[in-house]
Image 1 (tube, rainbow, N blue to C red):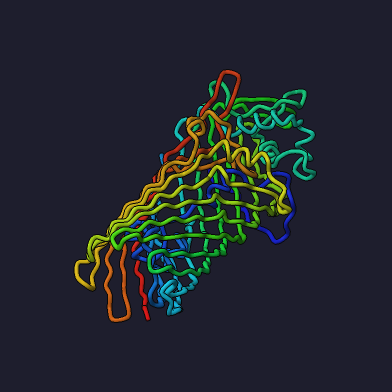
Image 2: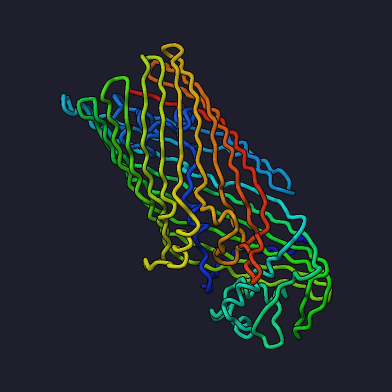
Length: 521
């Protein structure tokens, strides 16, 4: 399974039939890392009832009202990331980044009712998408070719329609590629198709995904406090997406059922690979509202609501195959003759609700807790004119459920200048149980048949901070463990039941060192 095909994104772009977005893509672009200042990260982001930190501009904007003096800071991080998949190599990489930078200004009103009005802006790296995963499957019970054959048959396409389908919009590109690569073969009537795997076929498969880019947010906030007991804030966020992905999936089969141009089936080896290049770019906006109440000095409660982010996005993508079979057929095939294509669409991410509580124990310790509800099943996709992608949105409702995130943070002031911190965060699985148990067909977008489910995400954090005269420095160490489940393609339904898709467990571990430098005046 040597990858012989090399695809470059070309400047000339033509439309294709298949949408380059779906429920799986909507979920991935709706994720968010634990990122912010070192103090915020060292307490696992449990800051919704505290405020007075630059990161509250992206979490609970009411935190801006807690400020009594102006603040300017910047945060740098170094990420040590490793990924390991079943039957695959462990990949590690190190990336330096700017997590956040911003400014908060305090305008004193000299009023007992509303002592000050504050405003601020910040830059935040909301999500890093840098990752590389490689793995394989040692024993194949089904094949991507069989899955594509089933999808093609369910669409009622004939071989004549597929031949012209890639250029006139009569058939999806995945069917066209499989047909041009002899992965699927029509019967003598040219109506039904069959894949390469049948009785007696054995083999193995491999996959690789290389991702880069991320999502950045520029936040603009204002707020204040009422009698130093109730703090409020409003924020507007402008987001930017720049995401690149390369995916490969290949199979090597023995005793495969290989067809030729005449439709004659012979048994022999089959060796093929499918490559995809995808780039997603665009911008969006959102609003955030928050409030913090301090009934007594020792206790604080916070509530925050994040609207969905409304994106306008562009997907640029191209796909191709390389193949060699025992009957002597070999070669390459590609979408649009190797010329990349574009799709323009809109994405509405889920809304979020955050409830928080914090206890201030004397003047030495803080214990804080956050609960976040994320309505993943309320994501939505539409075309560039706003017309809903009904099938994709039905898939969103079918695949995903609301997500729950729990965060707890501790801070202990060892001396008037030195503080010690720790935290823990847990995010549960937002995928419906029937989907995880292979009881639901999974429809992916375009020509990328694979998909990934995040089963759980955990953060363990710690850090310390030191105050100087008018300045401060904070450090944090953040460990993240994310358990993923990679699927090569959808479960294959047939008359006798369901054949689960080839699945690999992927462990994603990230160690991050963070430092924040700031001044208050």
